[in-house]
Image: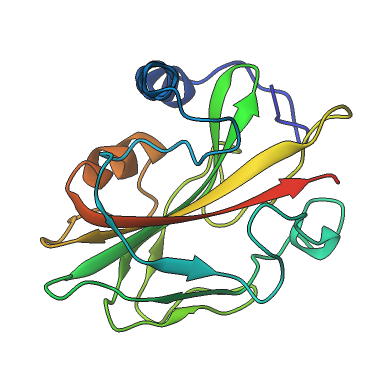
Length: 193
């Protein structure tokens, strides 16, 4: 398990997410996709828009300052091409490489469709952060145990209807809202190099 900040037994939230993750992993395996793709509990085959970061490139290492080994602040993110009709954006950060399944590091919902991105260490005005699998509200940066590098997948989803998620929403509730996505985009980083 990835919980380097404090070892806790598997919570019911993590167990529920494991079941959803298993479905996604089986679907990916059946599609014959290559390793390194973004794994996320969202419908596949959707129109994609663009998600980037000035701090790291797609597939590249996430700088230490955005991890538990550094300042543990969220990296700046930028997006373009949000489809017309989007009323809300949801952002998640997942690690699909933990032995126990997918680990949620960050969720943000109620992001206005006109927002161009997230600032370093912050969220767009009016956006609301949910719980992560560290049991905290907000961003919990990459913090893998010693060993091979882990992938960290930022997923941005566009919704045509409000999610109606509450502040501090559990990862499983955010996952359920992602099923209503009309468009998605991902950005993957790794840590450590």
